[in-house]
Length: 219
Ligand code: ZN
Image (tube, rainbow, N blue to C red; front, top):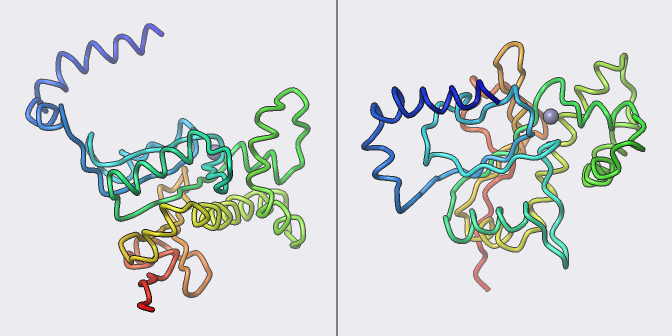
């Protein structure tokens, strides 16, 4: 904890004064354009990877970058998605998985979750990805885990589209969904191409979107 407090003291002494105008401008308002949903893993820092300052990203983080499907008893993730899309009117949602994800590793290797029942229950929201992963052949455990990370991003892209606020924004053509996988070691990101249904390097395919834009049809 000592290091955390020392970090805050350094922030107050060096960082805050250098960005005082930014913080003053953000004191009573925010207008982030992107909802960024990532794993809680300490090695993935959304603001660092996207080079965004405070106020730039509306962030949801949890074990496995999971978005539960919409249901009659909405939880914290659902409320945050709804707020971002309806109140903040974000234009983009990024669901970002990452390499060496402990949550995805646990699913892909069928790890015993008896000592962590809450985690086991939470990871059930990735069941559709787990079933696909188990049905496919993989040459090694490492390959199976890597595939699970990717399949989970696709599953969560499907889950988020069950949310009414997201559905409406997609229908009105004012929201774009993106599925990313961040590689911790190389710093590379793969993005899901919803048209070709495959992951491609983000650096070479900056225009790619997970879900083709859908415009409302007049009836
Ligand atoms: Zn993770």
